[in-house]
Length: 492
Image (cartoon, rainbow, N blue to C red; front, side, top):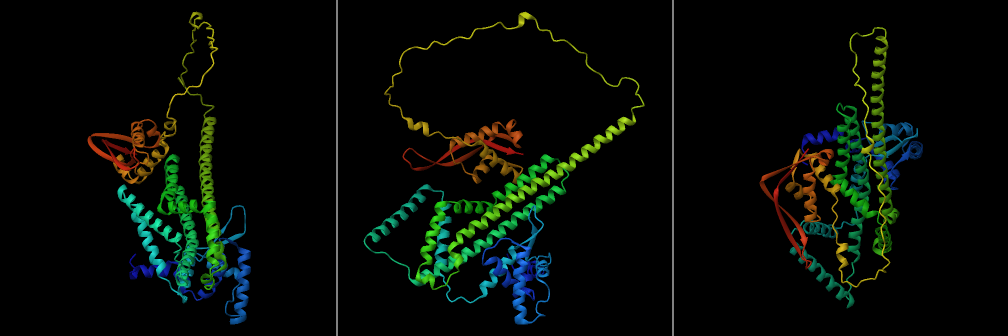
């Protein structure tokens, strides 16, 4: 993003974080919201509790600065901070309650994080951040390498390095981090842990913006209900399949592992007990920061579930309005029919087909056929000793056609048509030739179940396209296989 003059003027006038920093009450707003929401990691607070805490804060400040410093009541300040022209707090009502709730907005948390960065730090570490950058580049490079031989060479190099380190440890050579390196890495851990907690509010805010856009689309929709549902479900799939949605789902799956939670607890207790870390006087809540992550993630999950319920209720309300309109039309038809009851129409009004009897002759009915009774031999079954390889029974490959169909439909939401070659370039084959055959079977069913699912398939015999995938040969080595087939085109 280029910070030109026009953009900065627009941010100064519209962005809530900039308005907070430019406010004459910025010190009160920032200090109070940071102490109440950010430090204890509180996601939502009721209006009565928050007003009581702010009243205590105002009483203390009036004792120090005078009664004219902050003359308004606490509730007026809270409503002012939640007004659209401020946007520092989000005021809402939980379903089934009439008491207002307050929560921080992502813009306010960004302003608080920037204010914290202004404070002078006694120690600024750079080594751990440089090592983190190298580690990230290494992960990207290894994760995008398509040559199996290069990946095997890299894994062998890491294995040799670990073997050498194990030998040095067995020989008594155990290098330890000094106090400077410990402080450097712990400060980076603190910063990333705080940023991760603040990211949850932004993820939740993005989900709420998506729900608002979907509601606006429903309110202004003029097409069929089937097309509306396709648009709504497509929007839900879009947020789940976006980079942000996938990253949040991967983070949640990683953190929900009980083994990972126990490992985090043990490592935090071990690190917090180090003298170098104790000298930094870390926040006490840092010992249970992974529990705060879980709590914030659960709150985001509950918000998404609540938005889904509200969306379903919103659709039900729209269906009720449509049903009421149908009833009004039926009542209008009844009223017109009663009005025409006295005027009998002339001529033929309706035709009824003549009734006909179905003739079934007695000899056409099937005769009784006795059931054949099987005769069982009295011979005993003897277990054989044939040398049969049973391992092949467990090597069966089952291709999930529903997953492949969802991949095709997801690509067609972004474009009107896509070839099988382009589809496999974005989503490579995972099960080799069996999965490729399943794609061809989906294309063959394009006029049947494919039309029901929402797509059609065409085959261009004049163009031959190669399809490649990674496999493993009989010796366990990685190989690249290729198949050449006519161009297959999926369309809406």
